[in-house]
Image (cartoon, rainbow, N blue to C red; front, side):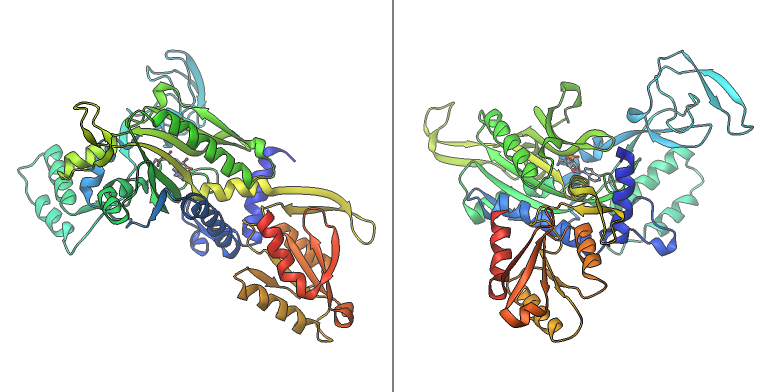
Length: 502
Ligand code: GAP
């Protein structure tokens, strides 16, 4: 299986088995927007739940937040997103492709390149311009100037009729094109708000409220999981980069001077977390950012990278954000976003009690990207033979049992003789315990095993005629295909034990 085959197989499995569908597919689809189907919704929820359990429920020092997607526009002024959250956009004059300059294929300025002219299909040779790149689609160096394209989605709030106001301005013949554009921009800006491009900012903006409500002692963190929106110039690679996605972020507030140690702690913690749920933990690595890659707020940063079919690429960023955000929001809002430690002396005056702006370590992961990563990691094919001795390929999603959409499938061997009733009773025991199980009586047992292997169900329980005689069932393990006969009364506890140990 080549690596690109793997991506094609994952996309096909996602649709066939109900993990991920193209958005609005019956209308031809919306470019690079995806819906999580019945099994994808379960997988995504399970990843988010494991993250929340690990960073909020199993720690004393982190609390959760669930903030609104729409925030005051001043948030984005203070954070720097209004001025600087943009990518360099370029248009190709030849094929009309619109692309990101920083991702375009490089070519030395003034060298000659050959490309196919769209108008007449002829091969032409031209010199690469000073910017030193060509169109990623057709290879032409005949390109527009770069312009900065802000990635935030803008909308408006309140019953303001901006169109009416713009229409009135269009009648104002005294304005030239440039002035008219500025005027319209100002009118739109009056009621403009933005869909958040990251979940992070709410955790800075609500810092004061969280400190007052929870009285945490530094170091402490705020965690949030939810939707974020970016009008990406290039959406790519299935659910790897989309305009609407979900993040799982922590803002961890620390004493100034301790940030290097905490950055080391969080990078190790996060790498271990990702690896815990993987069949191939060596597919995760840590890469430190070079100075030129650092965002305006960061003094240091590491990416947790995964070995995707196209190579190593980002899964989570762990940045040392200094005191940039709390200070910027303090300045913009005139509200003090500081922390008071009564047990530490102020380093300047030497007196007991130190008020300071905390430094921040930010582990920021993509949840929708994590769905792709865990599917890629879990996909396996095994060659074998079927009951008639013919060669066949077994497709397995070796998902970690805690991430698997269904923890157990329960099959009656036949749809009669009271076997379905027994199987349904077992399923309802699972439901009562809060464990997602699936009753399945469609097709042969072999096909049912194959179906559940392909969607990652780790344990299959089969009810047969022997069950009626001695109250035992078979449990089959997905990865090894080994089977055990266990007491029916132990079935739920056996699966629970496996889930706890996993
Ligand atoms: N608060 C910091 C921040 O948002 P980021 O590196 O821009 O940092 C963090 O985003 C993570 O969010 C990325 O590592 C990635 O997993 C995910 N992410 C970012 N943009 C995305 C997109 N367009 N589609 C899917 N996931 C995205």
